[in-house]
Length: 193
Image 1 (cartoon, rainbow, N blue to C red):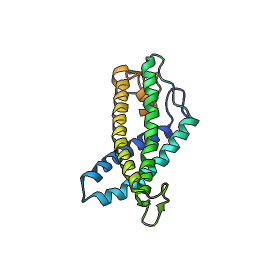
Image 2 (tube, rainbow, N blue to C red):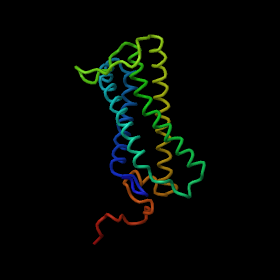
Image 3 (cartoon, helix red, strand yellow):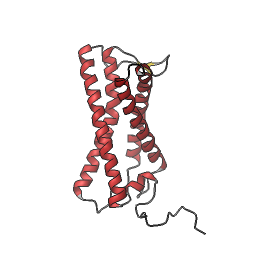
Image 4 (cartoon, helix red, strand yellow):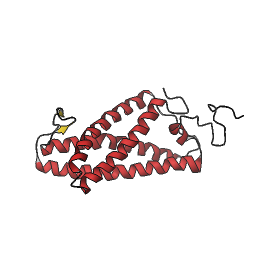
């Protein structure tokens, strides 16, 4: 359960694990477009990883609903609070929409979404080449938007860590209390001799 001032271990593991997987997916996506030689291998990696991210995003949303995040600092200006909430909604929407768009795109293109060599997911849309083309463009543009959101999220995290020093970054990075500042000793660290 999330304590009042920081995220629990499960929330942090989901956050950082998904961050690595999403960044990997973005680079795999770029590689699929840029390299004809690696394209088949990258596609075989991209599809199951996308569905895995969809499942993890749903788990993360359910966990967030059951264990709400710590409140933002009272000193944070209202515009920044609104921006933080809007950016999180946009990130969650993109984390759900990207794999669903990919699955829908492949379904419309008549391509199976292979998870393994012997298991494929059922199509979620009928075969329609025009819809495939539209969804392919949407999937690509949403990839760019997700990358921009990630950069914005990272910039905000670094702003909290290095400029504001209000404990927001530490609440997710290490699960430390927001009341513990960078100058305060770590309460879990062994005493110095």
